[in-house]
Image (tube, rainbow, N blue to C red):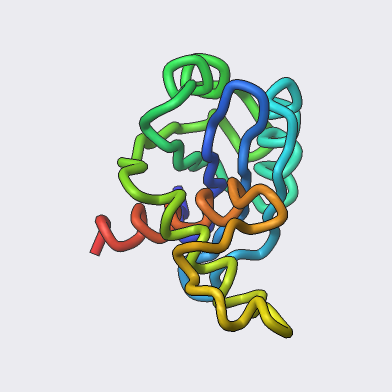
Amino acid sequence: MADHVVIAVDPGREKCGIAVVDQQRGALIRQVIATACLAEMVKTWAEAYRTTVVVLGSRTSSKEARQLLQGRMTDAGPLSVVLVEEHRSTEQARLRYWRETPPSGLWRLVPTGMRTPPVPVDDLVAVILAERYFARRK
């Protein structure tokens, strides 16, 4: 089973961050979706990117998400769920958001730690979880 491409999920009660991450190329696609759509989105992306590895954040709603996804059949095979520690991942995602989307005008003068991204960053959290998974495997 090739696991150089994974689907990473930051599970939540109402919304989830989800991303397909290639170990070499980084995030191929990422999105924030309603939790109710998680199983179908993971199945669709697993088939499209021919992967069976799901990296799942280990905190909020992880138990429910794991039960929903573990062993679910796709065209690529049964899904295998791997838990990854989420500690401080949201904080890291906020910082990454501001690196990727620098503020303009007077907002540049406001320290990064005092800014709140105008959009959810759950998809960036998913990317960070995948990166932690790949780093742990080295």
